Length: 490
Image 1 (cartoon, one colour):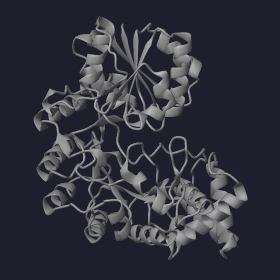
Image 2: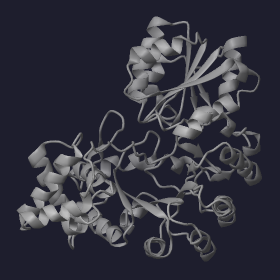
Image 3: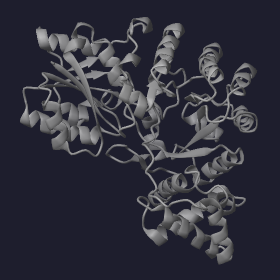
Image 4: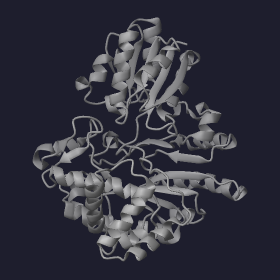
């Protein structure tokens, strides 16, 4: 073996689609290439030891916002103990503003953007000459038909134990300034028949959970319907063998034909991630987000009332021009639409995104290290932003966990945002913790809080018991990192 492809995933269950694309497109070098994934939190020495056990000449690292700090340590140690190993970087985190990044300084080569064509070409030159003179190589974007699909490279173990990420297209036509997809010119589809043939193969091998990373799944309705029909056919052919598909939807584009298709799916078969981000028209205009808020709200309401899809709807706090009051108004509007989950995200400054143009006027202050979370802006000071961060964390533990179905409406009352903010402030003051709160303790704290708001002790305990009758307390898990943009091919 000459080449090792590697990355640090956020969790073991997250299989890297980007690395599998690279491996699928290695051409003559594929037989000399292997793939090995790690998980953030692993010991740096162990990662380096396992990398070197392959005796590679080249190691290609996929670098993302969630793994750049740990990957920097891995590359630094690797270059110390094995300086002869050539390190090539790629991925969205190092594709922009690369000159100032420590990991880029440590590496031998960097590919920015798409790596499907450029990575194997660079490896061939490193191995066989002439040796590349330039350190930074701009990734060449090939015609979509020339990109070999990677789905056969998911192993049987991947299919059994991990999330299977797939994409029917790359890119996005929208220009939301907080997202890396703002830099795309459009969305590029893969040939649909070829893609569905790959999905058929995955299904035949036992894959039942398909997570689409397309930014705009419902942009082309004919394509959307064909993909959905593929899954519907599987469900109808064998109702006792469920298939689950996750799609990201544009919120204000849900024509009748798509509604009709969605309405055919049973419970537990569809999940939609819907990016609202903000209901404030002035903020939307400021960040170049085009969205018909009334249509978006109507579509979410329709999905709630007329479909069996699980809905995961996103809001972002900290956008320029968004005050706490306007965010609260949008939050309450979204809560009234009754989605299954509200993903309360905090703005992050992804490298290369145009959001940075508002820094001076709106006083945007971001954390200097990944994930570059906003710390303050003109309208929200640092202490208030920290309260929002805690709100987001506690919201995941209480609301998005699904564990407090009977209790949550009582806790929130008529003002969801204001009521939960008060609970969040109280919980932090009484626990000084946002992570590693055991479920048993969390239940007790919610009951105690309801009593401070005038509910009788017996009534509070009975309400919580209605959610936890027979439930065995267990630690509350930390949710996976949430990003504002998908990965690039490299």
